[in-house]
Length: 195
Image (cartoon, rainbow, N blue to C red):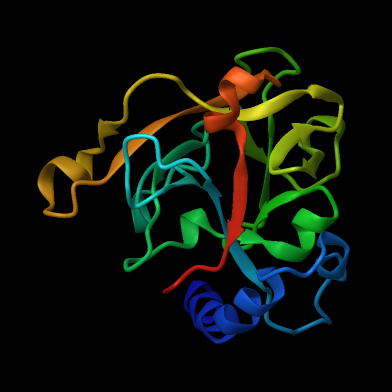
């Protein structure tokens, strides 16, 4: 199934790019027909911070070491390598869900509090797993004053980043109050994966 999703993601990549190139968010809210390919996107922080390749929301681990029980982080965007752990369902995002199709899980707040971690759980539309995408900010629907925010700490090399020449990095991800001072760590873009 993972292989089929990867192939479907490659086929849908150009369609996603067209859909994201200026189409209003409402145009992306219709779920795909049964059996249709799911359009997928990366959720990339607009500001590169200290990673010029970009930072994308990610599940810790890689391939068979992905750990869906751990809190989500941001990681160097995986443009040219395996990246199912960074792909989100574009149509579900339009419905207020941060659904990761490869795992059939949705991201949500561990608690509705500042510094609350973002974890994966069933896509059951519970209040802590509902989001609004507003002017680039991903706001917790249960408390719109709380936004998905990248940690202020410098990026750290990941275990693979220490071993491999790609030198990937990661940072924490949590809920923080909406703040103009934190714009660089709170503004997200939906980007079509390249591979």
